[in-house]
Amino acid sequence: MTWNIPNVLTVLRLLAAPAVAVMFLYFHRPWADWFALVLFVSAAVTDWFDGYLARLWKQTTKLGTMLDPIADKAMVVIALAVILGYSSMSPWLVLPATMILFREVFVSGLREYLGDTAGTLKVTKLAKWKTTLQMVAIAVLFAQGVFEHYFGMSSMGMDEALVADVLAGREEDLMGLRWKFQGMVIASHAGLWLLWIAAALTLITGVDYFRKATPYLRD
Image 1 (cartoon, rainbow, N blue to C red):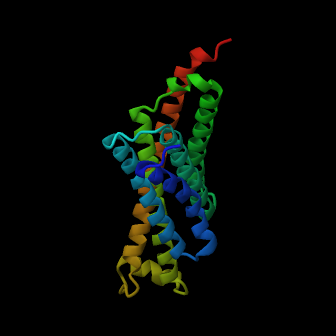
Image 2: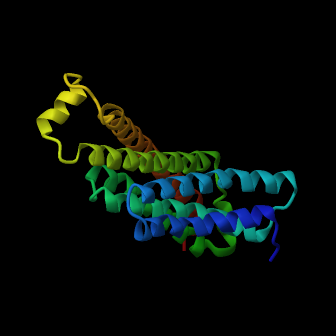
Image 3: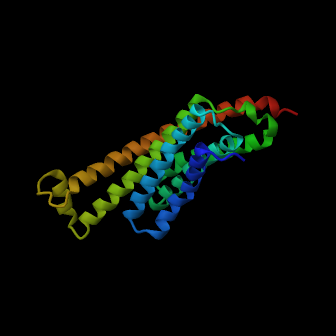
């Protein structure tokens, strides 16, 4: 094994995946949301940075090539599990998340079955866009969790009619409810749209990989 800066960044990204879930075990919200958001965004940035450095310094290794897609999948799968957990399994999140998880398991199974011929399933540009969209969507959904928690804390104990009046501008907004609510709604809608688009790209790339693997699956 060769250890260099790109490989170290990849390993750190791999370790960051379970750390996102651990944040919600050892910290209360909103600190857990903040830590998970910062950790996930930082790890997502290294996804681009480690590959860039490996190419720039000509330090591409078998270890990095193997770990990079594993780290990406671990980040996405664990982060989606965390988001589904605190969203009370919202159907609007469950369906695209299921599509993404199914595709990742399916393609991983294809690669394992193909063995030495798995090189035919090279990562495409569309697959890279898919991964980028997944990570952006997850980061936005983590941000939505931050806004949701702060809005809930600020409106706790307030009469529902009063909250409605504040949001409608009929009452003075002393607790900053409006911007928290707007942030929550915008992040929620944007995150959902991005996740659905990512899920569509996920299925498209999955079908593409299966089509390329078909010649090797015939008896």
